[in-house]
Amino acid sequence: MAPKNIVILGGSYGGLSTAHYVLKHVLPALPAQDAYQVIVVSTSSQAMCRQACPRAMMSDDMFPQDKLFVSIPELFAQYPKDQFRFVHGAATHLDHIGRVVSIAPHSSNTVTNIDFHALVIATGASTPSPLLGLNQDEVFLHEQWAAFRNALPTANRIVIAGGGPAGIETAGELGEYLNGRSGWFGSKSSKPKVSITVATSGSQILPALRPAIATKTEKFLADVGVTVLKNTRVKAVSPAEAGTQNVTSKATVTLDDGQILDADIYIPATGTAPNTGFIDQALLSDDTRIKTNNTFRVDNAGPRVYAIGDVASNVKHPAVHSILNSIPVLCANIKRDLRLAAGVEPSLVGEDRVFEEDTRTNQMVPIGQSKGVGEAMGFQLPSVLVWLVKGRDYWLWTTGMLWTGKHWAKEK
Image (cartoon, rainbow, N blue to C red):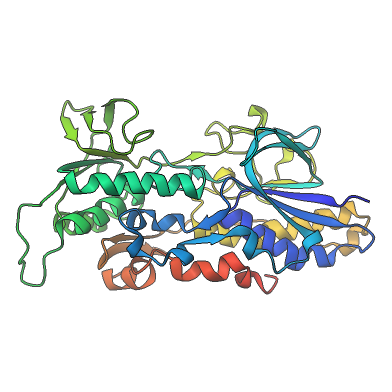
């Protein structure tokens, strides 16, 4: 008898953590008469620490590459072969009524259909700049970084759109890498080698943080040659593909206050877009995320369909720490639903678990390799602590436990 498929779309924090948790704690709790297989579908065969992109894109010397990029199939070789399968491809259509997901395999032009007994959608979000995320696979990302690195030595003017963490971290890393940072006695030249400009529509950069921290951040940025333009957004970019389809194209950037900036490199860092283009509009909210309740179920999609991370509407700020806090809740409800579907008495499966998001400000933003700003649980963090926790390697010290599943060794 064919196994019942538990399909997980997405090979990053949400998808891989869910897969490990289900394999470790959910499958062993199901009745033995049925066979199950966890199928992870990902556009990339490698997992990577996306938060590290602002620094990693400068040079391969910034991080050990075998820790930055890790093979997904190798991570799951620890489990029985009949319980896990990896599919390198992209979801192209979800038939939630027929309970089939269509996959375009990476190495084939033939679409594959996979039926599912349970489905977890964890496809994440894409960044406007291909430099700042795993929008396709690891090969594509390396190609974008290579082109960017080749263009850096001759770039005199760089414009970054967006005053959120991605834009500010990128500006800080570029500024320190290209212009250096002054020492204790201010020995660095006051004129930066490369002009770097950040344009934001907000009245301050890093809008989630208190104004005093934003002001401090501007001072750190100025020290590495970065100028901040506030209350103005990018109105037009010419050519239109600059920064998105062509990361090294020279561009003319027109701001809505009338300023015109010439850029040798233009980097859009204006948020992300949920990867939900393969999903029926009836399942999506106005912001194109999936309508998800606080149990992570997608009610309108039928039984045993779930969403987590950037694609789920029930989490206001889907940062990594929120995703990790979501996993035990999601997987407890998956376990409950699968046991009920297998005929276990309702009185034996327990109650639903409900996710409650921590809405306190938790944000750390490195500014180059030695400075940083942030808040945790509403408290301002000193620069040295931001460096110690995140700024040293952009969370790379945490990913080993996550990717291998050791973080989920115990049921939580």
